[in-house]
Image (tube, rainbow, N blue to C red; front, side, top):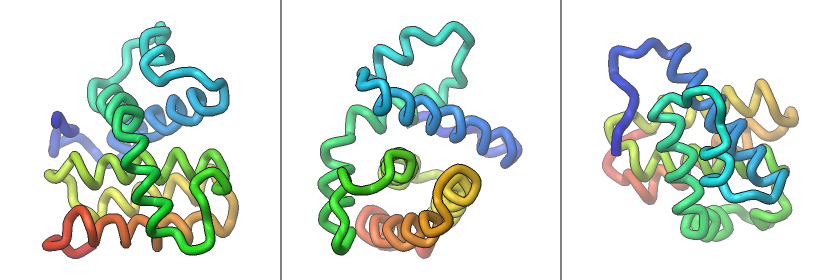
Length: 142
């Protein structure tokens, strides 16, 4: 999978993730397919943001199954929509962007939660993504 250029500044990488998160959230709230939403974009979308959105949507079933298995007392459907989008996005990235460290991916997800979600979301997302990382990248420390 094509990942962001390693020389790209962290703030630009964060903007790419924010854009992807916004699109995933919008698709869910509107009840439309991510591909339909991507096709309707009038402004050029960063290639990595496109990969994040389309990849997350394509693998959503397996991502949700893993999240259901790992979250204690929470079904994916019961999670706030924004938290679901953050968890799905980061889970996809953990599984498919192996050239980006676990720590970076989880930290970015936690920062997105701090900025856009509820006060308790960041800790929940951090814990759940740490479990995901232990499964999909067992040899890398987060």
